[in-house]
Structures are given as C-alpha cells and as structure tokens.
Length: 308
Image (cartoon, rainbow, N blue to C red; front, side, top):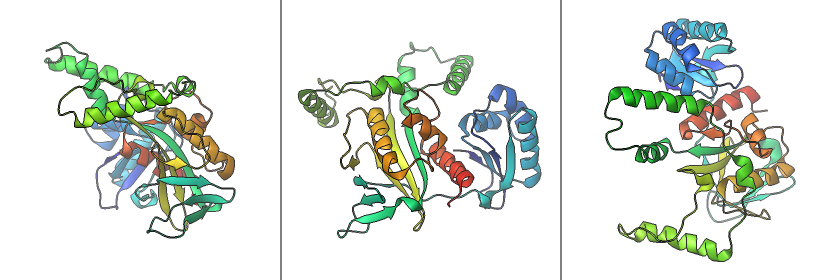
C-alpha cells in the first residue's frame, strides 16, 4: 500500500502515468529530497508502488516529487487525493456462472432469486496472485544458520538483496499451467494431511501437502468491479465456476477460470497484468505483496480506465 502522509483527504497524490517499476537506487534520493522525507520512506514508496507512489502530500511537495520522477525518466502527475477513487471491499463469491449476457451469482442479500449483473456494467477485470510477505520472510529466515543475522549490517545487506530480487521477480506461470492434475486418491490423501495438520495438536502430519508452485503463502483471486450498483466481487480458488474445469493448482485454476470468463465478458476492461496472466506469460506484473498493494493497483487502473 502506498505511503499516506495525510488522511484528511485534503492532500495531493503522486501517480505514475503508466505502470512501471521504480528503481529505488536511482530515484529515492531525489524523491526524498523533493518530498522532504527520510530516504527510507522514499525507498519504501518506490518498492511498494503500483501506480500510486504516495498520497497526502501538500501540493508543493507533490509537484516537486513529480518533477523528480520526470527528471529520472518516469512520467507522473500530481492530483488531489479526492480524485483517486476509493473502491469497495471485495465480496467473495461461492458460485459463479459466466453467461453470454452477464455474470450470475447466488443472492448476496439472502436466500432467493440469483443475482444477475450485465457485462455492460463491468468496469474492470483484475486477476492476481497475492503473496504473504510474513510467511515468505519466515521461510527465508528458516534457511539461515543461527546467529547469521545478529549483526545489523548483515540484516541490512539481506534486506537490500531481497529488494533487488523483488524488482526482478518472475512468477513461473507456464510451469504451473503444465502441471498435471493428481489422482483422486492423491487429492484425498492431501486433504487428510491438511486436516491432520490443523487438529494434530503439535503432531506433524505425515501426508504430503502440495504447495502452489513450490512457494509459500500465496493466494489467487479475480476482482470484478461493477457499476450500477458500484461493487467489487471476488472469485477465489474456493469459488465454483459452473461449467469450468477446476484445477487443484491455484495458479493454473486462476488462468483457466479467467479465460473461461473472458470468452463471455470480453477483454476490453482487462488490466495489463491480467492480460499477461490470461496469455500464460511468466511475469511479475500480476504478483502482489498483499491486499493493500493490490487495492492501490486497482484504484490506479480504475482511475485510468474510467467507469464508463
């Protein structure tokens, strides 16, 4: 999530004009000076941004930040915070049916007639893979020998290397798509292993639980932003899409479900990150650190695309 210096809504936001990664080593010093903040804040802003660099600045510092970014070769604009849309919280769906004219779901209000949303009211489609940085950090630290990071310089060095790797990270989607589905017996064994790990009271589960892509703490989702009414619906790996083959591999399932929906909805409201995921391209564009970063990306895309 972008750094917010003032939450009154009366400040100014700095937005990139196009989706690009910011090189913190190149941009952060000048950006920190322009915004009159600590360099660590500027580095964090560069690393966390997905279109929205910072919010809540006064107009003078926001314009200075834009000048610093433009001088470094990044197109950017300063706009009032109120011009950056606030999106609804995602509402997770249990069942979806992609029809020719729109999306059909169970009633969200309660038992009754299923709800129908025309594709014409669809403003934005975004498919994403979310990483859990706390779980990934824990998995990373487990690999270090004891006392390796006691020295502050060692911790700083590791953190810097991780930031450099994060800029160039690529998700192996082509490998995920090619993964074969397990046999029914293997699926049952994996489910039993997961259940045992939850209720085993400290006993280590013996069954093998397969992780998506060999990675730690990742979830998948497709966010659909509709107008009339304005709402944000979410398809997760637990959502059952009618007449769409399901995969036990979350990234593969995300790819298949997205493309099945696009046959009906069309691609005109698809984000650039989702275009790459739909095409099955190995990329870091559709990989997000957490919900906050994804929400910022959707807000930037919605402002760029517009509701109509």
